[in-house]
Image (cartoon, rainbow, N blue to C red; front, side, top):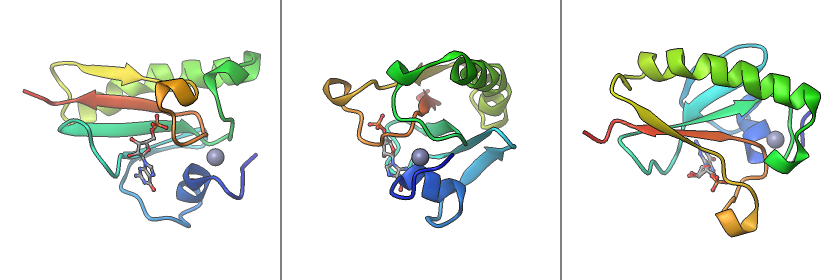
Length: 109
Ligand code: 5GP
Ligand code: ZN
């Protein structure tokens, strides 16, 4: 499932350019265009859904899959000494792109 108006769905389909660092059939990881840390990656499921609050069993499986992959992707991108994961949920958290994404931030030292 994808959303025609969603910028992250467009990134998945290469309709908007991005610097991709990892991709498989379920997920994509690319560099944030406005990095808030030395390394700032965005991990997204290829299946479009907007919010953490739209979680269901299938999406939780997808999120689990992503969480199992992120440590190796982080290490491959130089984050040997740690990193932070952030999911912004909704307007009050400052969520601006409504396709679920995990921020991977690190490399400050
Ligand atoms: P949110 O505030 O929704 O949690 O985070 C959305 C993130 O997506 C922001 O950090 C923003 O810089 C990033 N972003 C927005 N548009 C694009 C884009 O077209 N390309 C890339 N690579 N990142 C984007
Ligand atoms: Zn989307």
